[in-house]
Length: 570
Ligand code: ARG
Image 1 (tube, rainbow, N blue to C red):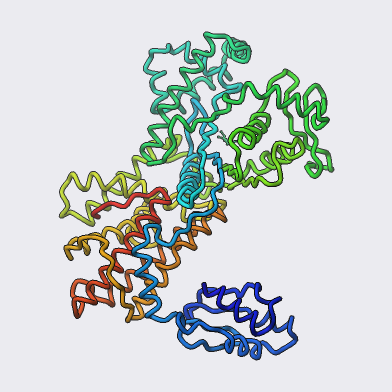
Image 2 (image 1 turned 60 degrees about the vertical axis):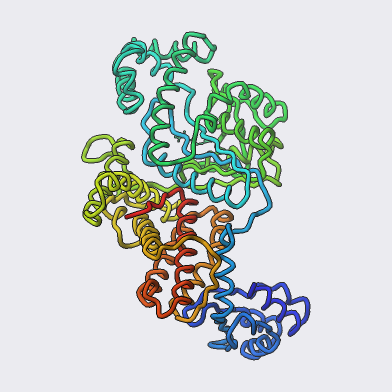
């Protein structure tokens, strides 16, 4: 809104050709906002920046919104919003079910995330793509988009021959097989060890792999059994995480089996793929390795087998052609960047990925252990995701027990998973998704600092204030802004819509985390300096309660977009 006002002034002061310049309005410590347009304009106009700024102020009509505008430094316009205007704006915000978040023009957005591998442990890397992908799915859905969740699980390929033979060895009804539901890694490791140690087993595994490719019925039944056991495991993790991935979102590698031959044929016929040393390859301009040697994307190996790249070409084709994607997200580890770029470049050549479709690799950075190495083990033993989450809940339980010994046992037992899981998810989301972070449970569950529990606690505290006030809910009460802390809190509240839009555009949930943390801090300052329950008069009390209610709504909605629940009490 301020942007448009300043642009109007630019137009009247300097001519219409300036009316669409970006006035670069940013939050500032010297005013609510500063517009930083005079300096760049000064060059274009050949006039001193302060003159330009003064001319701009003269033509600016913002009296209804801002205090009188002054110029500082080399030509910054200092914009302070009027308390009266803020009061009205936040009253409207409180009455707006969307809390200022716009509904965007609807796009179809398939999101590829989570994608663990069957009969292998989900590792913390999968935790992170699951949590980030889910937050993006929720946010884009909230902005009005048609999100299609695609869980591209690794459910096909060479390891299955080995896994199936191992399943037969231990027995389908055995406890070992059943353990796939709780500890798939052990099963995988055991079969791997046999594969490496016993040539006879390895031979069986290989010929089983051939039967699998050939579609042998009994082999497929055993394969399905492995997939089902793993699905049960994934679903338990998703349930524990409160992530919205269901069986209907599974679109694993095997779903593309019937497309792979066509993918190869089309590319070969179009002259995009060529035979090289018995394999069908795509050589792309700009993808060269050492000594400028071209790096091929192998789409059919010399033994006739297809690879990860072929399947991903099929995902692109399917998501554009059948799902009608406008924008596609692949939430996958950063090391797979080259793979995806080659797949997309090939798909563009083949005409499967028109320029009108945006495709983004949301790169996931590593999660590190205390030794700053990729978190793989915990106290020497292989890391189990389930155990990690259970540990988070236990740690949270200790924190809750200490903070709220007065709460009944069953309430604390209910809060602990919300806090523990919320803590892990928030720690994951509050760091830019492409940078690494160190997994440190103690810090994650702390009630102070930029943590999930701090925000959950802020929300619970507001709930408790509303309860003590006997607050009956959102009756529209006009908010009067008089104190500086109220001014700052309202300013923060009004920024929610913008931040959600930014998260959806830049695909960066950490911006929402940063926003919610700032909001909780602004609320804290407000709460300390502006008595709510003991406000000087009934009108002020009602106004401040309305502010509490709107802050709570924004906190809870924001956490929900991140996939984090807000306990009633804490
Ligand atoms: N299963 C793969 C892994 O664990 C991730 C798959 C990501 N999605 C995709 N379309 N390639 O690394």
